[in-house]
Length: 209
Image 1 (cartoon, rainbow, N blue to C red):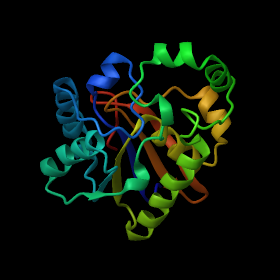
Image 2: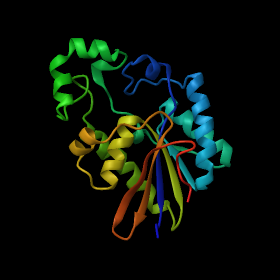
Image 3: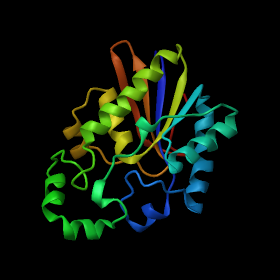
Image 4: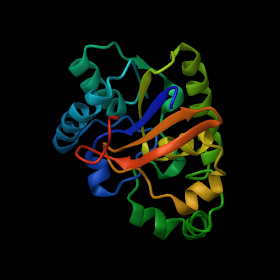
């Protein structure tokens, strides 16, 4: 039987998401579509009966997390260590512009090299380390049988999940599709560690068992 549960939840859509713009740590807000996604996902996540909700302090994740917190009547805590990867000079640029202006860096990323995004931004390994530190601080407060929801971002969410289950970050980057807006990963703790029970679960697809 699983002892504890973590639901790693990506925020709802933003206008930058819809326009293909690199956000990184730009503090963008949810779009109207994103707010509706958050409401729909929150109704599904409420069925898991969460005990703890923690979110990145960037507004798109914070607002997503608050939607669930208000629905289930729980407080929410914010942790800057759960922020998205810092994308350096690419923040605010379209994906097309980045591909055109930084072809060598884009080719390296496609090959799985863990270079700093946007020249002076973060690597995935750095993101994994800080997000994992946030969860390591959270876990001692989570009791047997309890569930925590972590509202975060696409890259940071995947990096965190890979770290929790001992998966090499390069392998995760190359082989696991990113979390879609307002979808989540379901991690459960067993005697020998954490396992991914569901990936890219969403309203109508997740299981609260």
